[in-house]
Image: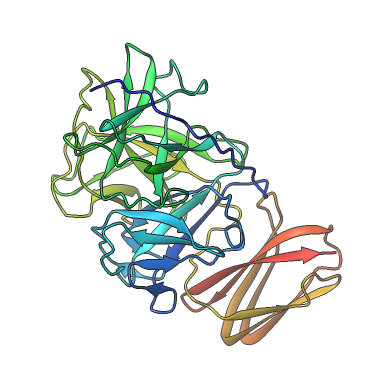
Length: 358
């Protein structure tokens, strides 16, 4: 593979919360139009500077099994972040996406110059480290470039640099195509690791085993393909769309087109600490008042609310109320002033709402 250095546009993300946040966004008729689905989450809403990574989830908690053999990117529409199909085909209703918003960490945006199918990443945090775990997602902003290709990472042992590359190696990365890249765990309690698929199902998936994933259906990992270094058994091109799936005991990585998962492929995996924000943002109409609040805050929905859980900025659950009514009131008089996240559940729908305690 060629060694090409291109411009790095570094935009460090400053987390507003003291914990990584992971949640599942599920496409519905209400939040989807054409090839675009709109994300509704308090950490991302009105936050054009947010940087996050996403991976398709075959069996989201509110969607059921739904393949999504589409290359997707992210775009900020002026008020909300969205996920869209790069080929502008209609977005599949019922598709679910794991969304990972790190707190701190070395997360930045890189932009290609269009002269090669790969480009070098020059960052002191990963230079000289062939074992680094790096994940990425394509972003439409700021250049407005569609990008219909699958991507992975490879490590050059000559220059001691990582590269992002187009899995369709005969085609250059589109000029000005931009990518969000996360290269360390940061301060939010998440973890990262490199997974080698030394065994596969013989079908289209490989089963991962890791303490931060095993038996944890709410772990919601994000993944990116890792070609490795020249001469590694992992030197396998994966020009397919990848997704993740929880099989009841373990998380798996699978191919969306159902092609056979090759043995010895390698993947970078990030897992957030699920204390805050593990939620499925299915459309749920909930009003909150008063907000900001001093003593009590009330949540009102058009449907029966089953549960309201309140988390502080450390990801710790500080209130939890079960309900069978359309209105739930939480006593927050004894809580410290600051920001909280309320997770409101009604049937299969869940919504995260930012609450301010004065």
